[in-house]
Amino acid sequence: DAGVIQSPRHEVTEMGQEVTLRCKPISGHNSLFWYRQTMMRGLELLIYFNNNVPIDDSGMPEDRFSAKMPNASFSTLKIQPSEPRDSAVYFCATDGAYNEQFFGPGTRLTVL
Amino acid sequence: AQSVTQPDIHITVSEGASLELRCNYSYGATPYLFWYVQSPGQGLQLLLKYFSGDTLVQGIKGFEAEFKRSQSSFNLRKPSVHWSDAAEYFCAVGVTPGSQGNLIFGKGTKLSVKP
Image (cartoon, rainbow over all chains, first blue to last red; front, side, top):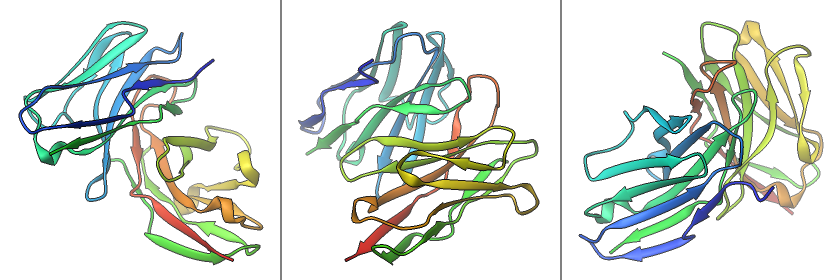
């Protein structure tokens, strides 16, 4: 199994542009989590899905952020419009049998 | 509310020395507990987990952790640190054991290893 796959690995964009981050979870795992990591705020849970349904999106910072999971094998996190303060590493993770989570390699986003 | 505290932001140890990273949690029931490691530029990798049974759990890379209910602690240990262990370590608690729920992460402890 290739594990959690995220794309792109690095994204540099200009303020105001739309950014879409993609995640392919491990096959057969029912929950998917999106996190953001910064030096200042550490690791923050943005949203998580169970069986493709959003369960808790209270961590989504504002309406500029949206996430979808159209099927069990794909999820997106979109930022529109992007701002410099959105610069961070964004991780996707899927669940295991005992609540453990398996993380992808992350997408490093830089908004200029 | 559930919480995880890692009291040490940064620890430096000499290569070959023993290591203990502290983790305290606040949770009403028996928690599921985890330690993750993050090397620079990488995602988080699961080191070990506790969900029941023996309170001393073994993980990958020679790490172990001990669950102490009376102290609400789950400290990570390694008898002899290698330079490749330099990384950031995160403790986490599962807040809905047995079902799909999110984890509460500590702020992390950065480990530096001196030659």
